[in-house]
Image (cartoon, rainbow over all chains, first blue to last red; front, side, top):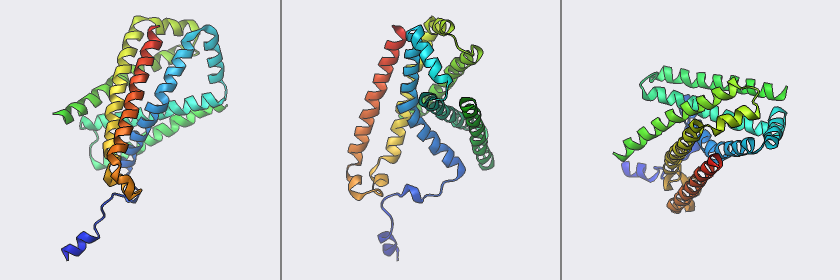
Length: 131
Length: 119
């Protein structure tokens, strides 16, 4: 019987067949946000720093773009919200490393709390941007 | 030894970057709406230049550990195999190319940050 078992044992891991608990969703989105920050938010911040300190005219052009509903301001707002998400979930992980909120119930609660805080922050940012 | 070192470097770098982000964010909030003179005075002071250079170095180290962890977790023959069995044979090559890509990009970003702020 055990040999039959071995024959049907899967060799490759199908990541999409694993049902993730909420704390795991918090963890994997933290990683995805990290990838986004490295490839998008970090170079974007560098671009913003470069043009905002280049000259007075460049500063004013950039300020005008960011104060109005443009593609650039939406993209910047989204990129920094991803950064804020990475920070929020990251602080949650750091507190757990210090053995704060490590229990299953506390971990589930803090995952939902982080989602809620980030959602409210996103609503606040996009409301200010689009109105 | 190396595993726990990477663990602590990742946590301490995260703490530094958190403190740095709070510092920059609090300046932007206090000086809202931002004016060119106060912004350039802030970015030309020695504190900003030193702490930003350190943040640039720390963030690429933090990113390297994070991205390397993702690579070794997901770009393996086991996880790539479910997409396509032929993929799994090239897992080491794919992971190597990915590691080289983000290393080169990370070092370039680090160099450009230093060139931008110190000039």
